Image (cartoon, rainbow, N blue to C red):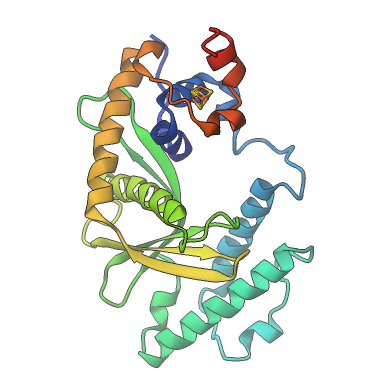
Length: 262
Ligand code: SF4
């Protein structure tokens, strides 16, 4: 049997929506090109998101050791070629927000906590005895004043509005996925992984939530279920979930019309 590739978060989330779609995705060679694809148009939401992440990471690198003041953002414009809208607006908002976080920490004499513990941290997990593991990149990890870890995600889409219950539920799954990988990778074994934060520059919003142990437990169960099915290698193990989402599924021809189920 060919070597099984680790399951990425996006595939994990797809599995929760439709088991069969996960199977198509996992076996699709184009899926594994993602991240190396340099052909995305500049206004593609994924490309904008990538550039925003990149600018944020570089900003922290540049800021290490700097002194931040209340007027800081006005004198620190456009450091990373993000002139074009909407990145310009997004990044300015981000700098304002992060500057305020620095000022708040400074008031408590804790400005050293302002710098992320890690950015774009790659985490992996393989359960004992499993033939396939899980992998992901966490956008950012912060340490809070109580010495606990906060998982930070940048989400630059209007659908990532945590006042929407559907979006919140998806985010709990995503963060649960990362929390399990981070815990089991033992990258920071002495710190509790306690909260998550979503930063959405498109909506100009920040949300903070506690990591739900229920979500984490559900994620662990699903991970083990997927690992077993993938190792088995049979498409029959992956049930179809026919819903309105099939209208936007790239595998609909093969899945539904191919075997004349409709
Ligand atoms: S067409 Fe529908 S049932 Fe088939 S894989 Fe896609 S989402 Fe699943």
